Length: 101
Length: 178
Picture (cartoon, rainbow over the protein chains, first blue to last red):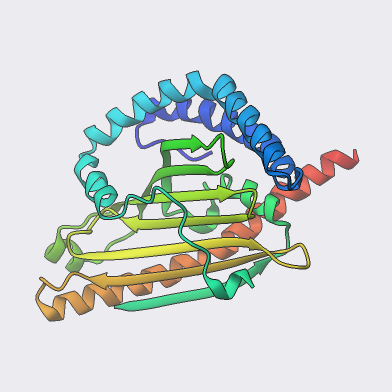
């Protein structure tokens, strides 16, 4: 696993990444193959989102606190804010029509 | 403005490539990427879409004229936002440079989508543009340098990710058969 911006955060990052990856690997393939019925899909997504929170929520809070401080200390906060203002990217970019056919 | 685009197919199903995304670094082919941090992540309980915002720290030799003119350094940072939608089987990654961003922007878009034969299409585009407030000659030079670096890194990224996917899934499949 790669290092964190701050060596202090690297152990927290690795714990969090390992937790997320383990959860994600159990999530993705069932999520792809789960029934096409919207209500079943939604139920599955809700259960899995809650499971992620349960498993990795605490690790995430600790790691995020550390990395937010590291971003400040490295003077990256204003560059990030500018990038977020220019392009918030709150939603996925639309699929290009040529590829969806 | 420079425009870059490449298409490629990975010999792995979509889910394997998308799982592999989180294992791409550290990578001997892409040793310029030294740090990765997640800044924000959400799992949408309605749609199942995962949105992740990360910051990547890169270290790559920078020509002396870039340092002199623009005050760049070997350390460069990139903001990356990805969306993984299991329902539509689309994964998109959008990246933009934070360093030198007052002089030029490099917007990169990557999309992974399944093919009919259970492989994964990789479509990468990038737009590299200097901000026109610069003296024209310097702006053009900076833009060409960024394009050249982007193209080199894009090739290395492809080779590096191919290796990661191979070792990741060969190892897993190896365990499964033991």
